[in-house]
Image 1 (cartoon, rainbow over the protein chains, first blue to last red):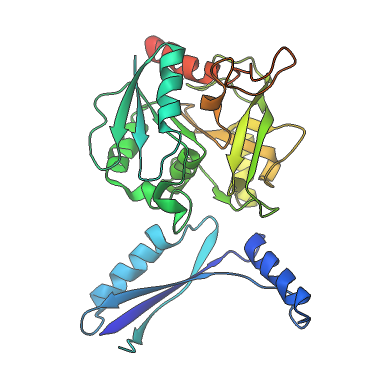
Image 2 (image 1 turned 90 degrees about the vertical axis):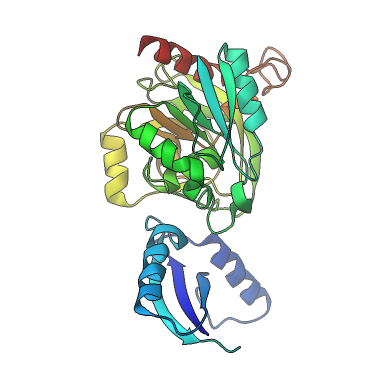
Length: 85
Length: 231
């Protein structure tokens, strides 16, 4: 069993209102050491058996076609992780 | 004149759009996302709502649904398409209109009667308006902030692709106050506000004349009927 992890983040130059709202909660909790919070997405694609190059190629394709929108987001990483199960 | 309205799982305003088509004088044709059949319609509306729960990104999963392969290929042949709210988001996710739509800058869902300026009347859906006409139609969204990179914004303005702009209030932080876009041919228009909720006196926005008497959205559905006749 393997998992292919896809990480997607909103583009740096875009305002992330959700992250900004979370940062406000940090400050209200008395945590002042952080000046920015950004919220992204982590997708876990589960594979029966080992992840092959073909799985990875499909994952990269879907990361660009569906899991992210290149206008507003960047795909940071597509990688294989061992399943904990 | 047959105008199709596609229902996706989570569409909310499909019935209202079908009704608007009928009130404008067209024949409404309900269509289903899970088919590959546009039933030979003369024009198409992607309605508002929260398709697939707006999971992943608004409109993203719907943009990959079965019927969208036909929508995209007919769009390239010039089928007039109007995307309203979630339908606008689907058009953007399908790459038929530029830019992207993100969470409102203030973080809240907003619902208001919104004043707009018609910025372009050379489209299948806005030919019934006067250029720079000011209209009021309802707006209701949580993720209606239009964004695009500087180069795309320059192209959008340079090629006059802005169809509608917010007036007085920018309700969601949209770049350049953009409320709606058209494509290069003017056959495809998308906008966040809801013209189908302003088509019949008694059910529209308030006006100076009477409560709920606003019908400024009706011309959008009438425009396409004359366009299709002339085509």
